[in-house]
Length: 590
Ligand code: GTP
Ligand code: MG
Image (cartoon, rainbow, N blue to C red; front, side):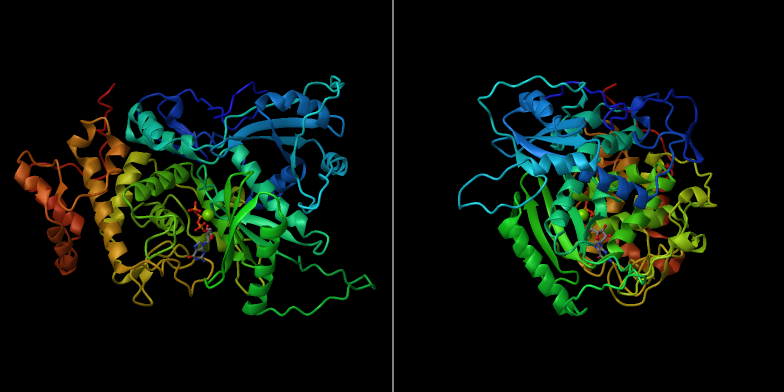
């Protein structure tokens, strides 16, 4: 844990922004009625009213520039910051410094941000390599600060913004539980979970610096090389400690037809095997030469071959791929969907967390559902058809609104053209449901979804007929011929449906309010083989066999969904609560 000294950062992302709570809060272009309990936690702290939308590409460019203006220095302790500040100020204008620790025997680091890229160039040109044959002298923005016996002169420069920020260690599960227990309602729990576990500004900086290291290392030979982060590190759905997905591209495809001098180049081929060969070479480069890169593993048999490695200095697990630029456009699409309505990201966080807690997702690849597929399920649910009008537009709506500057076709021929600037989007929703209701509706929707014959389609915004027998079919929005969730087995899908149904019922039950693990916490327990519902006073009636639950899936020809059937049963038992339409949750500890 690092120390917080003082913050002169006006726009520090860690500062909660408060809004005077009235009956209604305006969210983006919509009104969103939340619970009537005023709290600073009741809004996502990055989705304040009237905050201007920054398009994905602009955001990426500014983060990349920030990384070019930054260095990472290993120091003795947080106390070294004054000396380091003074030393670095002799090469350029230091604007911010962030301290954090990582590792079991904590290594201390300070990320130094300069005003200009040229400040970094002059700092690096004044840095040195240690003498001796055992190290390879590689230029990078990762350095260490050695002690000196010389007298330190005080900096002539005016004191810049020195921020020793809270570190990069995610909140422990116990701490998350404690924090959620103190909330007043489920909506507040969902927002609190999001605000406390989403990726921080410092983590984002470290990820872009990690990508920059790779880019810089090949710059001499590949001046057009770019290492672009994608996935949850940049799509707005990243939580603290999430992995860093990056794609390395060697050319920018912009030929200057006016130039008469042309570089001689070797023909490298464009097939998969040449791509694999190149990727292997970059894997070796990481392993042998780049400081901080450890545990390099080559996963070359996958559909998208990757090099996995761990960065010891930035504490980031990285997946490096090549040429897979459609992943960047996919991240842009998810970023847009998360920005259209401020409920989207908190809801995705809650559902990802639930899936992790009940054992539906797993960090290693397998037959289970991935976070990415889960995110698409949430977005598809928010597109309707349960909601009228929907909370999110279909991808087709974005495609139809695209301008010429939004047109992108990847080298592999994937058409990634869709509107990038949502301020130009003619879409608005008057849906005012709060997060608690949306969460219940999500569980309800997928526990009765016809996975047997329908696929999830974000392009149309409505389910379509399935094209093959995959258990779960989520059409890849950018490559419609592909199923994003092809890996998911029937068994895992059944687990998902079972867990969703269980969660919907628990959220409805009175008992979920009567323990300290109430509300959102109550659905984090793994479902039992026998589910205990609190819908009936008679304990025996509340116990349901798994078999019973799944038998109802075959009852589709009766015209009633499983949930309808269950509701009828509830009504018979004297409980007429509409699933997902109740706001009865109260914190018993209040
Ligand atoms: P976490 O790393 O779990 O936080 O989420 P993530 O969205 O980053 O997922 P992951 O690291 O597994 O994948 C990174 C990105 O690769 C995703 O955001 C997608 O853009 C893309 N991706 C992942 N899985 C698939 C897939 O099955 N098909 C396609 N087309 N793209 C995928
Ligand atoms: Mg990822």
